Image: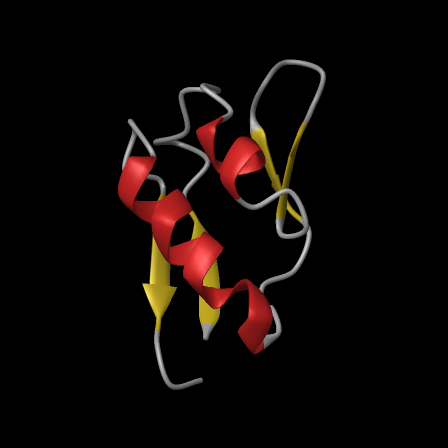
Length: 65
């Protein structure tokens, strides 16, 4: 899995951080920080959920990477 974040779409809601804190963090202004663009398999379920709940649709996934 490869994780891509579009900062132009990020609204700083922080849902990704709540769902997958090993993969996402937030800057002081609330915008997302991608900690791991190729997370290990044990985090894939949480990353998929983070992409689903992101209100700005800023998280994109490339599966099978």
